[in-house]
Every structure is written in C-alpha cells, then in structure tokens.
Amino acid sequence: MNKPTLGIIGGVGPMATAYFMELVIDKTPAKADQDNLPMIVFNDPQIPDRTDFILGRSDKNPVPEMVKVARWLERAGADYIAIPCNTAHFFYDEICAAVRIPVLNIMRETTALLAGAGVSGGTVGLMATEGTVHSGVFQSYLAEDDISVMVPDADDQAIVTSLIYDQVKQNKPYDVDAFLAVASRLRDRGADAVIVGCTELSVIYQDLREKPDYFVDSLDALAQRCVDYYFEHRA
Amino acid sequence: MNKPTLGIIGGVGPMATAYFMELVIDKTPAKADQDNLPMIVFNDPQIPDRTDFILGRSDKNPVPEMVKVARWLERAGADYIAIPCNTAHFFYDEICAAVRIPVLNIMRETTALLAGAGVSGGTVGLMATEGTVHSGVFQSYLAEDDISVMVPDADDQAIVTSLIYDQVKQNKPYDVDAFLAVASRLRDRGADAVIVGCTELSVIYQDLREKPDYFVDSLDALAQRCVDYYFEHRA
Image (tube, rainbow over all chains, first blue to last red):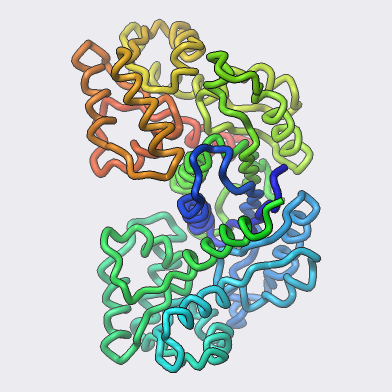
C-alpha cells in the first residue's frame, strides 16, 4: 500500500464524509487514479450523536465507538486519522490517547488558516452545532491566537441546528438563503470572518455557486491538511 | 457493527468513489446519521489502469491488487462488495472467485434497470472507456435482455476518453457540452437510451443541472442496488 495511508472516522455525518473525500481528491495534484492518496474510510452509523451527549440530552457516550473505529483504522494500516466532524473534537484528547498514530484536528487547522489570513486580534462568527457552540472547545483554540468568537443569537442558532439536523442529515433540500442570512447577520454584528464549523454546514457551503470570501470552511481546512500531510510524509 | 456492511473497492477512480458514496447516502431513507448504511471503503491508488491492460497497452494486470482489496474488505467485516468502476467488471468473475461474500455487478444492475424500463428489444448507446467498449462485456449482458448496443464513432469515442482521462481523473473542469453532444449524436443515430457506462462520466452526469431523461446512469443503478440489498438483508 502507498504510504502514508489516511484513515477516516466517517459517518459523522455520512454526507459530510463523502464531501470530505471529494475535497481531498480535488486538492490532490493527480494526473491519474494512481496519483491519489490511499484512504481507508469507515462510515460507522453506530456512533451516537455528539451534541446530544455533550448537552446531556442523551447518556449515549460516542467515545467508545469512535475509539473502536480509530483503533480499527490503525490496525487496518492507517498512518494518520481525520475526523470530518467538528463536534466530535470535544472528545479529541480521548481519541488521540487511544491510538499511536496522529489524529489531525479540524479546529486547530481552521484556527491556523484564520491566523494565517491575519484574523488574529479580530472576531469570527461561528456557525456550528449547539454541542460545539456550548462546549467552548473551538473558542479555546481560537483564543490561543487571540481571536474572539461571536455565536449566533438563539433564533439564528435554531436555524443553524435545523439546517444540520432537519435538512443535511436527512438528505433533504437545504435552505441556502437561511444559511447565508445567518452568516450575514454575524457579519453585521462585526464578525471579520465566519467559520463553517460543522461539516454538515460544509456540505451546504461547498455546494454554493458563489462563495462569499468571508467564509472559512473547517472541512476544507482539514482536507488541505490531509493532502499536505501526505506529501510531507510520502514514503 | 450494523449488518450487512457494504465494502467498496474504491479509487477506480477516486472522485467516482466519493460520488458513489453520495448516491448511496442520498438514496437511504435516513432521519439521522445512525440510520445510514455501514460502509468500509478502501480507496486504493495502486490498482493499475483497467483499460490499458484490457487493450494490451500495459502489462500491469489490475486483478491481483483488486483481489487483494476484495479479500481485505472481506476480512475487515464487509458482507457484500461494490466496485464503482465499469471497466473493472471485465475482471468480475476473477474478483468473485476470490471472496466468499457477494460482489454486486454494476453492468447487470444497469441492464436490469433498462429491461425494467421496457428497453428490451431496443437499442442503447454506450458511453464508456475504450476498455469497456472493446471488451464487449456490457454488450453481452445487454444481449441477454435482447438489447442492442450502439457505440460512439471514433471521433466521439476520443471525446469520451478525454472527458474521462484528461478531465475527471485529473480533477479538471469538464466539458458538459461535449458530454451531451456525444449522447445527442447517439440519439440521432437511433439509440432509445444512453448508458452512462463509466463512473467518471457519472461524475459529469450527476453534476448536470438538468438531466435528460434518456440517460441511464450505471453508478446510480449500482448505488440503488446497494441500498436495496442493505434493507433486504438487514440483521
């Protein structure tokens, strides 16, 4: 097998996983099939909802199943792991501790992209699950780079939650205008940039015909890091 | 793990594999992540080009690597296998013989869809790789249902080959007008339907804003069969 092989903890959610693979492929300078990254993907529908557990709405802890998949990927030959789900990164340290191979961090990659774009000292809007917003994990990474975070008000967060859970996760048509309107209101309140901080929202964002330049997509940041990692470590 | 688990021999090509996953997910009646099909995907860039071997332009036989991936998927827990590559089905019997679990057949699923749509006794146009066109495997499946096959002329086959190898497999913008024009000329020559018979062409077809109703997409047919198989065999 070509090395290093990317292992993907997939299915959180499933469509975001497929979009993530597309982004990785699209960012790979390939002249033929054979130039692409080797990937092992485990789309596991048995990982419980991350937000429900973080907010105490369910006692089904997603960590044991995610750890199982991470270890399975390691045994299967993966050399590094990506998890195309922001909310899951609340449990990042526990997943890292379970395997010997590196686990890339979608929130750190997004933060690095913002810092690189000169947003340090500024304010970003965060569109994400309630789990991600309330856990404060993204905020703590961003604070390390002196970036302040603004979250949607309660009505707008309800719109974001519905886009994620009632639309993308159910394979229903999604309301692009509502997505853009929430971002626009964060901008009006003073956000220098808006983080697409949930991989279901990335599905909507990636399908936009025209992408406003103030968005920073977490799924895109993670995909770029996976490709860079491959070429940096290629055996 | 939920059963049955779908194993995918991926990377032939990579973008087609991601689109295939999207189609499977989109066809699954899911209310939440947890309702989706379990999938193990091995995106293997080391599978040699199928067409080059079939046409004798290369002595790199893709069978040993595809057999390796099929057996790997079986050991990893897959209960049935899909190969989102039409050209690879030239080697279908050899792959089937290497594993105990069923391997779905993209050409048979496409043929069944056409027969079900009442095309039996008629003529279909086939847009596919040179390997698929020259091997005659698709033609033999279609003949069983009394369906005649019309292939593009040499100039149009060159256009199809370029769409597959110079555009989709290289992640370059693809020429939608050229894709539609080849199909249209097959229609003018009397094709009742046109088979999208290469999964790279399915990438182009799936991205069409408006899909002419005379197309039958092989990738779509295989994805539907995977979802149906899951619900028929769910444990």
